[in-house]
Image (cartoon, helix red, strand yellow):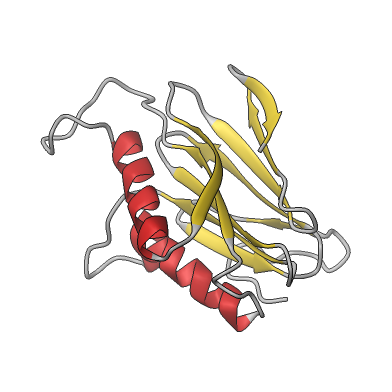
Length: 169
């Protein structure tokens, strides 16, 4: 198992925490979790045949040259997929689930009036389309925060929200 996160998981926990502007890969059947998704986008990738899974928590839609790739939806997804391939995933079998991208505050960008959350969702969609990865489920938008838990043995993504309740994607 390779882990790319700021938190050091314990070998007995089976649970890996993914921070903001971070991602992690697991092939041991544990779980990947992240919290604090407001306008950020959570991207869960899963290869059902190899059992390799990944979870990214991206803050912004598109990378700038000086930024950490995990901070941005476009480069974060690409980096996550690359690490999953290194762990044995086949990109032709990988599917995606998205959550987050809320409009938490009534601020709009000078870029067409879209919120950061809307732009994060659009960037994730375009990046996954370019990589030929199907999005099989989404819980995006709205005005509420979310926490995610990806069961890496099944690909089930639990989305929790105090305002909107819990669901499994």
